[in-house]
Length: 310
Image (tube, rainbow, N blue to C red):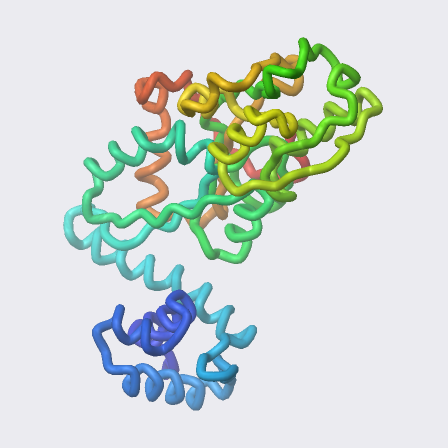
């Protein structure tokens, strides 16, 4: 006899996802005492502690986090089963990760078409650096993610979907930049560690025997471009993002060597765990070239990823 049912999974996942019993109860349309009781009953049946009390709140244990990861996958599969029984109509939540640049310049048209084709699917979009997204994908916090080269994702499947041109930007006070030495000891404006574009720029500086004088980290492209425009430092950005920002007119754009400028965005997921929702997204990516003036997607061959991509 099984000790877990779908209601148990939904309750545990909601408590963790929403940060507590009261919020989970509100989302699930239950009273808090019912949520607490169901969690205690499940812990008793399993013989493990899923939460520990810290102050007035509950913090998931390692077993609780593990159960929540499985719960998300099983609940999604239950939704897909219902979808299949309703003549293929997709339902449920699709958690998707993306670089901020991809979310802003490539995905609006793709997701609009996805919504038209599958209106009952609710997409939860999570943005982050390539490293952070791969980490969330490995923990099953998200089902798939758009990341950029270079990346290291052993065991994951990949589909190259977009071609990007990376450019170096600086304030207008900086002259022509053809090699790293032309920058001197410039300040780097970038996302946090884990950003693959940042790694590209650091590698280029290293090729010329240069080091950044300092690194200022920001969480958005508008902030990065505005900081560069103010003459604070230099940054590397996709040209597609730069064209969409008003502040782009205030910066100077420098081309990068071909081996650094050419960059591909990949969609990653767990092989053998491709949901109907993910299949629906992949079927739309081939049409991305007709959306918002985006360049054609690159060869969409699927392959397992092992090791560093360059």
